[in-house]
Amino acid sequence: MPAMSIDAPRLFLITPPIVEAASFAPQLAAALGAAGVACVLLRTQTRDPGEAKKIIKALAPIAQERDVAVLVEGDPQLAVRAGADGCHVEAGAEALQSALSTLKPDRIVGAGALQTRDAAMTAGETGVDYLMFGGPDHLEEHDSVLERVAWWAEIFNIPCVAYAQALSEVADFAAAGADFIALSDAVFADPRGSGAAMAEVAATLASLSEKAH
View 1 (cartoon, rainbow, N blue to C red):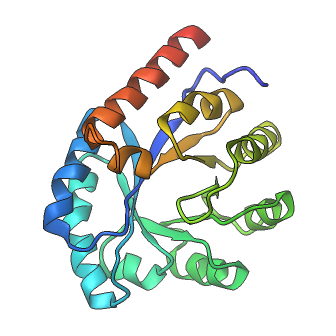
View 2: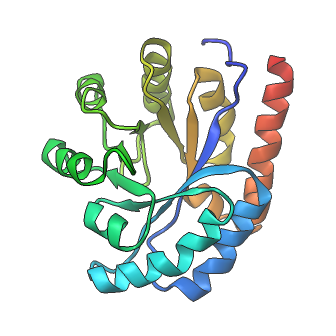
View 3: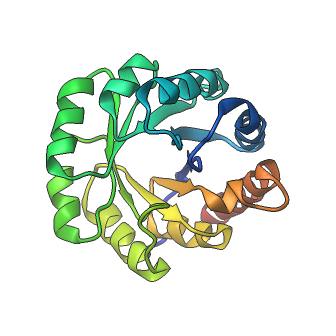
């Protein structure tokens, strides 16, 4: 396995599908307060654009006030209307091009649901800001995601995000060269609370960074 780069990966939080903002806000604030996070993908349960906008607009400032980028899922128009920083796209080439034409160059566009090397390379040629391997809706074997992360990190310059299903996977992805590590249920379903889970992740990355130096 490649040696860990000197720069530790940054953290990318993916929320569970949010039903309403008020009850979720404390979990989000606790997670963001416990570790440095680069980006949050805010997912909503509702498919109603107006309701989704309300939820995003209520929660986005919790992240943005900490200089954390806020992304929405699959809807570039919602990203603009809700004041988000970008959009995460998993619906294929046409949806990705639509998001790029709507949001670039001012906002972030990332691509997920990339389960083959060919899919990753095709998405990487479009001008996206990052690629995500694995994801809460695309659960794969850890070793499969790890293999693609290591391959991508070694060859390509576009940042890659590795989705960790468990906190125990963070160290592997860091060692493989992931630029970002994404976490969802591993944080928000942790019985200790989201803050405690993120504190553990921060400690893991700090320890790896010390060893790398």
